[in-house]
Amino acid sequence: DFRNSIIVMTSNVGGELIKRHMTIGFAAHIDGERKQQTEYEKMKENVLGEVKKDQRFRPEFLNRIDAQVVFHALSEGHIRQIVDLMLNQVVASLKEKNVTLEVTDGARDFLGKKGYDPDFGARPLRRTIQNLVEDPLSEALLRGEFLAGDTVIVDCVEEKIVMRPLVKDAV
Image (cartoon, rainbow, N blue to C red; front, side, top):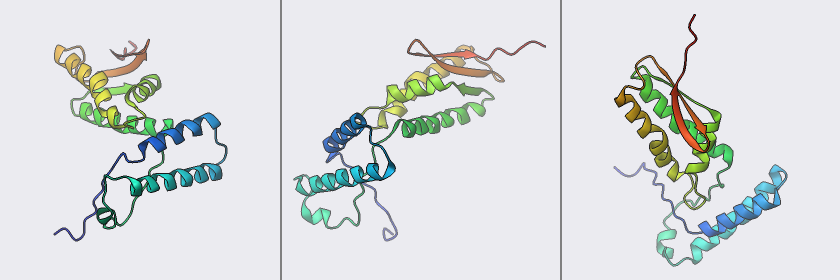
């Protein structure tokens, strides 16, 4: 039964307009929430106009869509939240193996910068975290560098992700 379904479709139509708007917005350092909203409304109007003009979607198709949403551009804070959500999945997975993972702010910031692409948004973040954190951590666990009960610190040193065990003070 498909009657009570919501279908979410994404497109990069108007992506250039959004990217240009982001550049202008950052350069101008927009002050105030009201002005930001006004700028967003202008950009949204331009993007929706581009969707109608674009030949990829026939008018018959567009008329069957109930709503079109133009998302706000991701801020550094949004990227950081996405990084945190993805890392929380890694933390939960390791917790099942009795290994604690602590990620420094520097590592979180580095992963966000490395994994964010203005053209693709946050999509590359998953791959970045997998390549720079999950895969090396899995290999280290297999080599026995970290054991059950250990706390692993993930940090960024000289633009590289490094992992080390938390050294517990001997009492």
